[in-house]
Amino acid sequence: MHIAKHNDRASYAFVLLSVTAALLFFCFYLVPPFFQGAFSKHALWALPFLVFLLGWYGVASRITVWRSFGVEQIVVSGDRLRWTRTALGWKRTVEIPSGDITELSVVAQRRSPGSRVALTALDRRYYIGDMLLHCEAVELARALRWALGLCELEKKEAEA
Image (cartoon, rainbow, N blue to C red; front, side):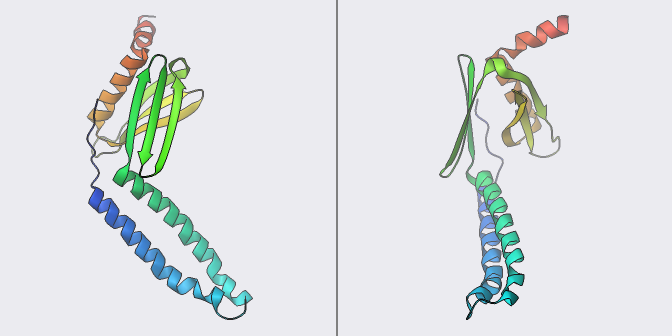
């Protein structure tokens, strides 16, 4: 199953560049007091603002890099689900035994891209898919249920 990206890479790259430019602009004014002459307690006023800006820059850059270059690969083989997320040099792989999966549902955003598939395993919730259309999230959830053998469990629960 292949789902096309709904993200416009150029716009997210522009956002990343804009946020970087804004950070550099503010750092131009906040950092120099720390390096002018001897250290002064009067320069400490800039430190909380600088830490705040750097923290939000980290959050914004992670989101924009993921939205621009992120790729998710879901492989079901045997009794395991392997979910790999890759964005530029950042890679994370999660392996979950299919017997540990207790719930698979769609988290819906009906009017815009943003639906996801929620997967619960061992009391931990994972969200698969980013910026999916609702119909794509439903299709992905059905395909995962079928591949993991969860359709049989749903039929047995419905009959009981």
